[in-house]
Length: 292
Image (tube, rainbow, N blue to C red; front, side, top):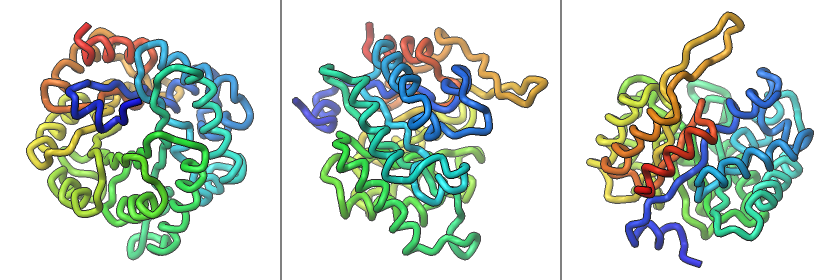
């Protein structure tokens, strides 16, 4: 089986999956709960979502472990211990994949605690938190590691260093830009690219953030700053808010699929969707990415 980097080098455009949290909430997950809670309490629903994305055209499915560090699990209600959540999540992704040629990516998100001097997280603690989670994902047999939705170089560095100490699989490092062309901490795409080159990341990414137009502009900036493959998973447009303060994503699957043509033409090697991206959206993205 070709590795993901070999497939990209051959010119293949790959399709990642869509949103985890917003889809699970549409399927009954309590709005205040985390996806990791259903890894243990409703595992069949996790498998069903993975399977729906695979049927829609995903080449890559991410484990439901975005909030899977021990410190973040504690902050989201202690839904389970770090070993149980991460190991089970990989098993569920493998169950959904079955015998199909699909890539399982271990998802690693920020700890949810700012690093010093702005917060209480020490550099050594962040490294340890990420190392523990990544070791579990590696032991489970992931094919790819996705360090995603980061906004601070200091924390991303600890996640990447922890990953490099453990895994031999390719590493994606993906930032979220929700302040125009900057992250919450003021990081620009060029700064992120320079840091990721120094750390030895294999694939650079953009995910979540704001609307499609802003994310596309960031994609162009990142493409100009790197020769590495780019992972691109924007939200399904900007949401509206209903009377109960729920986010409603109104971008249609057809509209998102049409936008995906620009993402591929703009230099993205791997495309998918973040918040609001349903299997129906993902199907249209896959059609555009694969040129079918």
